[in-house]
Length: 100
Image (cartoon, rainbow, N blue to C red; front, top):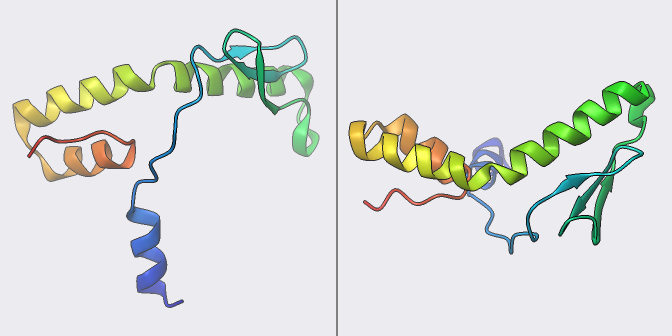
C-alpha cells in the first residue's frame, strides 16, 4: 500500500456501534460502560505510568467519550455558522454529519 493509499484510509471516518453511555472510572483505573456493567479497558500503570497518571488517563477517556455527542453538536453549530472546510473535516473525523 502506497503513502497516498494510507492517507486515504486514515481520513475515512470509521462508523461503529457506540458503547452504551455513560462510561465510568473503576477503582483501579479501569474504564467501564453502562455504569460499570461492561468492562472496556484497564489503564492501570501501562507503559510504566504511575497509578495517578493511569487514573488521570482513564478519567480523560471517560470524559471524552461521555461528551462526544456535545462535541459533535457544537461542531455542527460552528459549521452552520461559518461553513469552514476545516470545521467540516473535523466534524467528519469525529463521526458527525455536516448536512451539506
